[in-house]
Structures are given as structure tokens and as C-alpha cells.
Length: 638
Ligand SMILES: Cc1ncc(C[n+]2csc(CCOP(=O)(O)OP(=O)(O)O)c2C)c(N)n1
Ligand SMILES: [Mg+2]
Picture 1 (spheres, rainbow, N blue to C red):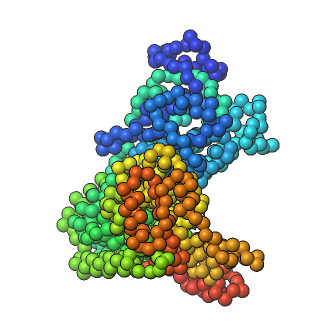
Picture 2: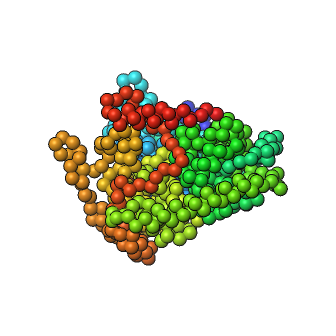
Picture 3: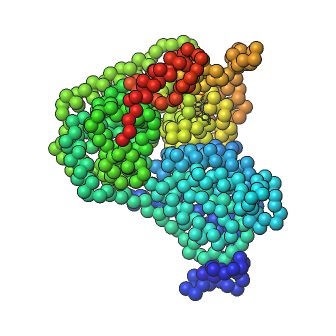
């Protein structure tokens, strides 16, 4: 392969074939990048997918003449112009999540601010274990014209740019200083992106000059390559031991995480739970693992969990954690599992997660392991009193959801009722999307999931602004489903601009803006910590304080100005009607509903560690501290 190992960067045009006779093609780094990416495929269970369905981007001088040129001359690979680089990464991550990580989108930016705008999105993707490929432009490798526009200068080194900010939030990070480096960088990137255990944000910084440089690339680089996503099986001795542990348990409980859904193990889990009678609770990422009315389903667990799930977790003597990272919201800051002799068995493709909670680690794919456990546990069933207890807790919860859905509060109505109306108007295959504020907790508890892909919460990073951008990614991945984006007024004000992209591309979203004039979530938290909610409501400054009149933002006019169809709903009936109208429409629609800031869904049988000031002259803070110190005593080490 001509050009390899040569000190010079430009092979001679005559050099067309290598010693083993493979042909080469003279292309720019950017052209070769696009040609490579288009030909990558994933495969699982015999089904193949084009791994990169297209490229999202915003051009600037750092990519327009390189990647921009390559994308423009290529007509059979979609390019999507978006409005904000952070949003673009959320869109790509949501697309990947909705596709069970079998497909994703590429993101290209200019250098400088365009690039660093993606850092938040990259962190979100990595934390949520979602594959996204980011190609930020970078400063000249040639260096002679430095400092270029938007370059970070350093007196210490010339080998630095703002793209180094991506290092801690990327699962693979690289910078292409010579055109031939992509021959090794991109295959390595693909390896990480398609590994269920390793995946996350992959960042390949592309210096502006190198993007435009040409090289004799070997044809082999552009041939179709299929990355098989396997279903690894675990060590058989550990599996035998896990079986023994489960058989000898009195109160086993399954914690279903995102891995159950990504592995498409939901059906297998349903059968396993039916056969063994073991109750199932779900994390945010795992919600939808079972339909809400499955006999063994106890719904959400942890800080935002249902009473039944949290009571059973507290008492369980064996936790079978499948595809979960055990975030503090799941473990209730390590207070969830109080049985002194509780043991953990973790099924996880990722060794790092499998070992958490001092568990017996079954490092393996969720689906095949559930199937193997089902076979090995043949004849095992939890005892009837335990099964009956789980059943009755589940029935009680169902009544509580009905109560909250039909509260008859206001107007302004309660957030629980808004969730009820959206749940009732939406159909089984539809998707609800949310990320930050008070809604994720309420949705986790209250949403009646009917389809494994129907509940899309970004709660690893809980990033305000993910909602609309993420909704767009979900719709791009599943255009046949109606997508319901639930967004708080705070999140909407942070990032609503992808409404324009949704209209541009004809990807219809149903957006519900829940307007409570501020941060109901953080306001509630502030008060729970003994404070008075300073800085958590949108109010005018008055006498030096932010406690004047409510700032009313006209979200209807705002959404209309972006081109969406928008209406206001005051009552539950208004909301239902508006959502039914939106369903019939083909273009993005926004329904704005005012809710009562203070009418919250309670927490049930759980706790979250948010440290309270150890010393304070404020009585309520001191009181909160006393309670906090007491509650912390329940935190356990495993
Ligand atoms: C990017 C980002 N900044 C800050 C936060 C911290 N935070 C979590 S919820 C929240 C308020 C959200 O307000 P809104 O969207 O109106 O939802 P509400 O709390 O009213 O339900 C804030 C500031 C965050 N999660 N993400
Ligand atoms: Mg709000």
C-alpha cells in the first residue's frame, strides 16, 4: 500500500498499487473519511444496519472546505443542518438510544466554539453509554499561520487546542495530523463505537488543513465492513453459582436497567419473571423492560421509584441487576438495599458495571444470560406469600397512579395530570422523551409504559436542553412512531431551536411545554434542604431580590415564531383536545400548559443524598442537617 511508512506525506501519482496489488485512490482526508463512514455496518442476530445513517453539522471555516466539500460532492449520504452543536450531539445520542445502539449519526463542526459546544453532548453520550462520532475541526497541523481565528494559544506547547477538552468525556479521542492516520484511527473508533461495553462519545479532531490534504488511500479502506455485535455468554461456573444463589433466596428482586432494552431482552425478561415469579423493578434507562401491567412489574425503583419497588428492594435478600450502572437514583444513594444479608448478581456486558455492589459478576449479554438462567431455574418459583405481596403492592400503585392522573387540580393543573393526559392520548408504540427537571421523576413513577422503546429518558446526564433535540433524534430513528417531548419551561428556554430543524426535515414532534415559571425541581430541592428556593423561580428583580412578579414568557408565540403550530391549554380537557389535534397534524406542534409550581408528586419510600450545610445560622437549614445526618446512617458500602 503506497504511501505507508514514507516520511513524505504525498505519494507520487504514479504509485497506484502496492506490493500485494491493491489499488489506491487519491482523495482528501475529508473525502476518504466520508467514504469510509458510509461503508460501516453493524450486525446483530443476523440483521444488518448502516451504522451511520448520515451526518449532522454546522459549518464554519474549520470544516466547510474540508468535510463540507466532501459532504457536498457526495449525494447519497444525508447531511442535516442543525441549529446548535450541543443539541446536535443530543440528537445523535437519542438516535442511537432509540436504535438500541445499532446505528448512530456523525456530527461535524468548525473549530473553536462550534467544537467545544459539543463537549456537553459528548459527556451525556458517554455517561449514557451511547455511541456518537464527533468530528470537530481543529487548528492547522502545519502551524505556520497560527494563531488562527478561534485558536487557543499556549506558551507551554503548540500541541494543544480546545479539542483537548474532549479527552475526559470521550471513550476514544484522536487528532489527525497526517492524512494516513485515518487508516488506523477510524477502525479503532469503530471498534469502540460498536462495543456495547466500551461505547460512548468518540472524538476525532480534524485539523482544518489536513481535511483538505490528499493521499493515496487503499481501496480496501472503503469496502463495506460489518461490525458484528455479539452476545457474549458468561463463565459457566459463575452461572451455576448464580443459579444456586437465586434458588436459595427467599426474596429475590430483579433490577432491570438500560442494558435489558439495548440487548432486546425484554421478551426474555418477561418470560423469566413469569416463570420464576421474581418481581421486576426498573431504573430510568430500564423503564419499559416490562409493560406496566405485566404481573411481575413493580415499576420504577429508587429515588424516583414506586413504594412497592422500594419496599421490596429494602427487604430483598438477592438482587439480580441486569444491565444497570447502579446510579445513585437507583440505589437511593446506597440506602435502597437494607437486608443485612443481601447479595447481588449482576448481568452486564461491561465488566466495570458487572462488578458493582460486590456482585457475583456475570459478564455477558443480557438476553442470552436471561435465557440461560430461565433454563437453569426450571421448576423454581418464589413462595406464594412473597408473590402475593408483590401483586398487592402493584395493585395499590395502580390505584395511586389513577388518583394522580385524575386529581382535578387547578387550573393551573398539576404535572401528574399532564402526564396522565399525554399517556392516555398516546398509543402503545409512541415515545415519550424527557431529560431534566421535575418531570423525569414523575414520569419514572407515573408513565404507563407499553412498549420497550416507548419511554426515552436521558437521566444519566439529565441535561436540560436534551428534550427537543433528543426528540428529533428519536423521530429520525423511528419516523413511524409519534414522539411526545415533555419539556419544562426552564429546559425550553435553554434549547428549543431544534424545532426549526424538525420543520426543515419534516420530522414531526408533539411538544408539551410544562410552564411553571421556573425550576420546580430545584426549588423543591432547595426547600427540602432548609432554604427558601432562591433563584429557582422566574421573577423580576425587585428591591435587589429576584422575588418580584412572575416573568411570563409567551411560549406559544415563541414556538409559532420558529414555525411550529402552537396552542395554549389551560385545563385537562384543553390539553387532551390540543394533543389529539396535534396527533392529526403532520408538522411539529407545541402545546403549552401552565402547571402549579407547588403541586408535586410525592417521593415514596426513598432518599437522595444531597449534602446540607454542616453549619448555618438559619434554623430550617440546621433542622434539615439534623435529619440529613440521621438519614445518611442508612448508606451502605458493598
Ligand atoms: C444543563 C443543565 N443545567 C442545570 C441543570 C440543573 N437543573 C436540573 S433541573 C433544573 C430546572 C429545570 O427547570 P424546568 O425545565 O422548568 O423543569 P421543572 O424543574 O420546573 O420541572 C436545573 C436548573 C441541569 N440538569 N442541566
Ligand atoms: Mg419549570
